[in-house]
Amino acid sequence: MHLTQIVMEATAGPKGEQVSRTFFLDRILERNTTDFEQVRPDPPFFPRLEGLIEEYRDEIREQLSEFGEIVAEAGQDIVFSAGARFPSKLQASEPDNAAWKYTGNKTDEDVLIFLSDSDNKSIPPHFRDEATSKVKLYVVASHVEDSKNFLGFFGDEIEQISNTVGQFVKMEEYNKGGEIARKYFNKKIEGTTLSDWYSERPVNEFEEEVLESVQNKIGVCLSNVNIEMEMGENPEYDVVALPLGDQSYRFAIEVKNYKQEDNEEVEEAPAVAMDSGELRNELITKPKEEADRADLSLITIVKGLKEDQYENLRRHADTSNVLLLNEENYDEELEEHLLKEPLRNLSE
Image (cartoon, rainbow, N blue to C red; front, side):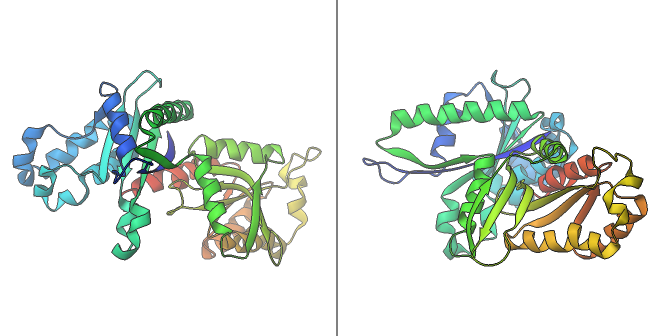
């Protein structure tokens, strides 16, 4: 399963006036009516919704079952939204919370898109103008290639529509995947002690393995992010992962390999000779301080520790709100923290 995001903002063109923030999404759905299926019950349900809450939720769950239990539960909450307590509200459309399945031929399997306004609900009303002008779509696919193919299709649609309506409506902003992570850091250097940043390729094989694991789960990520500070030491993050964009679940991932080509056995790794204080500083304390500078939570993935070293350090990591993983468990744990948990909380 793979999760990525699209952020877009429509504004009036030279000859235009007011424009709906979902203009481009609405046009794409209209142009591809046979390829998009909105996730919702049939209209006859609505007059009886108050007494059929559980049946409604079960139907949503069934429609999303092919995407797995986690997505189905998140979809229930997003599509159902506040109407769970006030069914009469669902008599009319809910433009800020909706879901569609893409069933077209641009992807091998169906792709699910969520339009969720949950990011804006926590923003005080007098600060909402800029936030609510943006449309945020969460894209869930069975495989990373289907995610990429859907983003390509969606981008082509945006370009074709823009060429037709450009005098009246224009796309002020369109970002997807890693572009959203880049914008996160561009905003961070405005008015802070961060003066610049850049991203590079992984520097070793283990970093490449971890990056591939992250990329197979989420699209909003970057490798080897280097921050330039006005004062002090410059932080460096081996991987940055933003499953839900800039809103929550923001992670810096520190990747450390103590094994070397000439000593693949853990007993021969350099970490065996290091005391617990050195390891705690190198794997937890220092990288957490660096992650905090960019408002990121820290995940450290380490290879080459003895079992007792790992368990001891993991206890220290837990008390520091750091997730410490090893080569045996990191892929499964990343799926939980980068994919499943953010999906569970997508509607909050």
